[in-house]
Amino acid sequence: MFAKEAYLSAEIVRTPVQSTASRDRALDKVFVSALEAELAMAYRLAGYLMADSAEAQDAVQEASVRAWRGWKNLRERDRFHAWFSQILVNVCRTRLRQQSKRRTVDVDDVNLQTSDPFRAALARDAVGRALSALSNELRMVVVLRYWGALSLAEIADRLNIPVGTVKSRHHAALQVLRRRIEPLAGVAR
Image 1 (cartoon, rainbow, N blue to C red):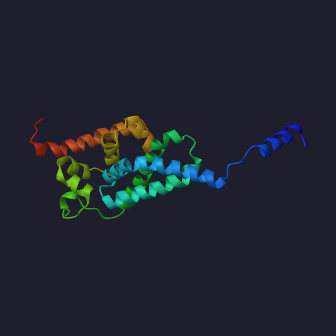
Image 2 (image 1 turned 60 degrees about the vertical axis):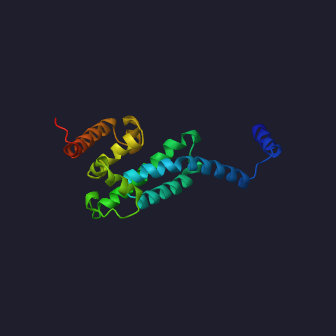
Image 3 (image 1 turned 135 degrees about the vertical axis):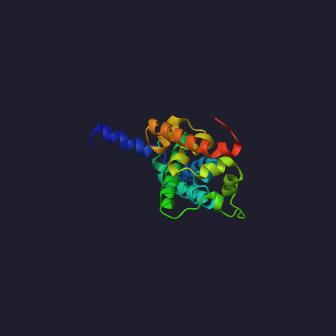
């Protein structure tokens, strides 16, 4: 045995070892408190992205499970918000892609007697109705920008696309929203 190995072995023996179970419970508590701080924001963001409260709940649940599975690999625990919102956006993107393969109905055509707060909120005002007319890609940029309060660079990071693409989608989305809202407001250009 080399001297260095003998020294390390002696240090390991002398150092009291915290049990794995207690260390895991401490990590669990840190994760739970970090996640609880994010849930309200996550549900609101997912609700506007998915335009459906049940889908938003499912997306937040799935993102929470994915975050739990990846928690031990997270190096920068102080960046939990950015990390978790990235997971949530990815989950929403996947769910929206799956939804696009199914038949969709415009919010104007839906019976609003449901208790879904997001559908009711979107249908209640002109912006919400116009938002439902956007494609998934355009709606994600608008929701992350205005409801998620992210900069264009942060949106590019979350969606894993170039900033130029975010800018063009943002511009295109605003054009579509303007065309849908201006006739309702009687604004002349």
